[in-house]
Each structure stands twice: as structure tokens, then as C-alpha cells.
Length: 260
Image 1 (spheres, helix red, strand yellow):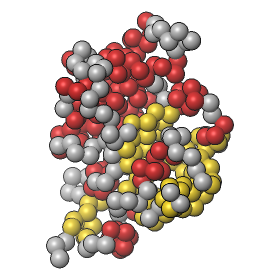
Image 2 (cartoon, rainbow, N blue to C red; image 1 turned 30 degrees about the horizontal axis):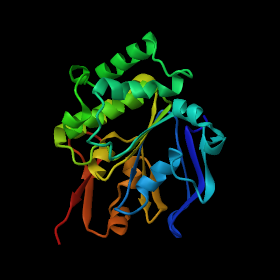
Image 3 (tube, rainbow, N blue to C red; image 1 turned 180 degrees about the vertical axis):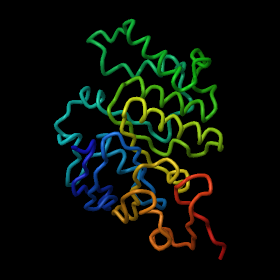
């Protein structure tokens, strides 16, 4: 089966500094694929490149075998949704208005929403559990509520692929699990491919089908969580001592930090 996303020898440069260097990997269709790595390893740059927001210096990004560069903007928006880490706290729009923006790639020249667009907006809010917030402004919401609103907007796009940049950052444990469960449910219901950046290795190991460990813009490891979450691999990547065992609550690996 053709992968949903194929990264082929991708390199990205910012101010003459290589952020991503000759990177290659594939994201299988319908996977929950999570990118981990130390700060400054190029995770956000990679995701923005995959979203078409940052041009590649060399290499290519393929969506189901077709280059990202060959997609027109509206066509790309129908295939791919991107949720940034900083979603903006001072937005004057309501939750309903924000979620409805996800229908923009499907609207005509006049940009007028139809009954189906409104129904899909309601479905997206229901799926993410924010129905009761529909008329609230985004700047009045908590971090977790805003994050679910932007995920609802992405869901409303009906894309084949959703890219999320650290959606659980700065959220409490309850909201972290809610966000991860939403993504797992979306993958299961719609067979949506999820590509997510995360700094939380244990959370990533609980939910990911596959992990990519990025270090200094290069692939250090890629595979199932049990293959990537390895003591020597992590110690070399993060420069600290860890012990890896199996979670008593499931079959996924668990990382334990060791005090110096």
C-alpha cells in the first residue's frame, strides 16, 4: 500500500543553517505517527514543511505518491489540516466561527456556507466535546478548550492527514489524555492519518503506531515504539540516563529518568 506521506531526502535551511538534513521516512496510511526528539531537533520545521508552510531546500514531500509542490492551495487544504502549537489566545472569533473556518476549502467564490457546512461544523464540535462552548470567544477559553476547538476545525476540513505540533504542551494530565484519545478515535473512525510532534516520550509511546526520533535534523530511529524507545538510543539522543521497562498498564514501553 502506498504511504500517506513519503519524505524523500528532505533538507530545510533557515538563515543558511541546515535545520533538516537529508531526511527520509514514510508514514503509513491510517497511522498515528509521532515525532519525538530533543529541543531544537527540527520537529516543528519538519511539520511546517509537511504542511507546505516552509519550502524545502532540497528533496521532496509526497502525499500518496504525488509531490506537495504539485498541489494547489485549495486542493492541499482538502487533503491536509495543520494545527499549530501556538493557536492564538486573542482571537475575536467564537468557537462555532472558528470551527466553521475548516469548511473554507469547499466553499464557492462567494464563500457562503451551506446547510451541509453547518451540519459538519456541529458534528465536529460534538466529536471534540465543545458543543457547549459554541458561542464563546476563543480568548475566553482554557488552553485545553482552545486546543480542542482547533482540532475540531481540522476535523471539519475532512482531510486525509492531520498534522499537530505539540497539541498537549502546557496542558494538564486530564486534557493531555483527552487530546490523545480524540486523535486515536479519529484515526479509528475515519482512518485519518495523524502526524504529531510531541516532547512527551511516554505519552507518545502509549498511543503511537510508529515513532520517529529526530536529532539535529536527522533521523536517529524510526519504527514501532518498542524499537525506538531503547535505553542506548535515548541516552545518546537526549544526553541523560534512563531505564526502559514495560508499562504495567499496557504493552507499551515506559521511560524512567535516573537522577545523576
